[in-house]
Figure (cartoon, protein in one colour):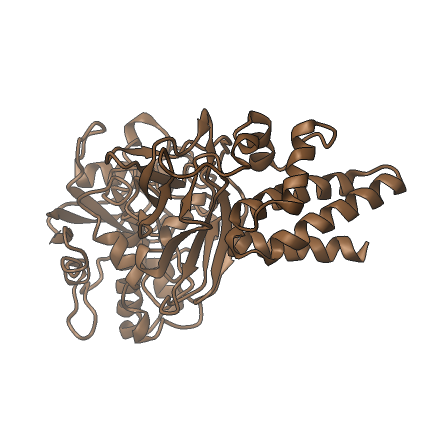
Length: 474
Ligand SMILES: [Zn+2]
């Protein structure tokens, strides 16, 4: 599918129209925005028809800086979109002399954001409610820093495409592309006159996603954690590795989740620190042996995180998710092979799916191990999941015993890990030297075993090593 848009240009307050809206090599705005059709299988391209027939308006004070209210009113006259337009197909680019806000040096403004801001108290008003229908260019401000006519036209073209990029909800970029912020001293080099791969991926969703199409969701502000969507799917790789692939439903398993910024990424990326199924941004899907697919229900639920994970190209972020329990009980209940998949940024154009991992759940017919009865108790499940529990309880003592002399393997490693973590928590919070020493010794004994056992999973093991070091230094 493609998105056919009609772009109207309008002149505000006696601003003279630039002689041309093309680059020196003849590139036009419609050409820049019509190159996304091959970027994905069910892709959408953007067809922009430039329509310069609409009016120019004069005011009593030609040359006056344009207020955001004037721009909104102008845009409304230019596009003639109704406030309840189901799909905006007419967009506008307004040429004015200068912006009345922010010191007047602004070259362009994405004023139509769908919410009120310091420079635009009207943006949230009913009559201007449709966001991202148009943006503005301030030719007087451009003229002031690019006096030569070549430079003026090149800068005007760059800013026009940049502002239209905002219209499709693209954010600023630190890379070499149209979404880079302009420099005061000179026009950007020719290699800036393109969209990055990530931006092209984003734009190719123009006909499918209200986050992209004009008039859809409000403009994304810099502070929003939706910035993550800027990192395109093709720049990230999501992978999952279960710490074991064959187990009883009541045996613990960790899912290692890795988000990697590929070497080929053009620039470092900041992603929200939400790589956890407790956030809506990360989903884990489980397909049971009958083929039914369900969402892993995390016992925790968090709102947006305000911290980010910074990744440079080639760098990875890894975390473990305890998978065997979910809210309501054990995650795996039926015997047979379960397929697991993680999705980052679900329900958005930037959704990223991991490859599948498989876990075989044992059932009737498989010999029940001797520790089966112990591990199936609710108290054991709680300790294994939350890694804390009362050390005086009989179940805790039984598990501690099992972590010392149980059959070697993944289950014993997980139990030792949970016991070790529980002791480490008490070691940290201990009020008496005696209790501190006792818990340190118990944590060390358990963690030393689990750290050596591969069935625990890479990430949990590295946590073991860190904890061991801290306790030993105490
Ligand atoms: Zn901008």
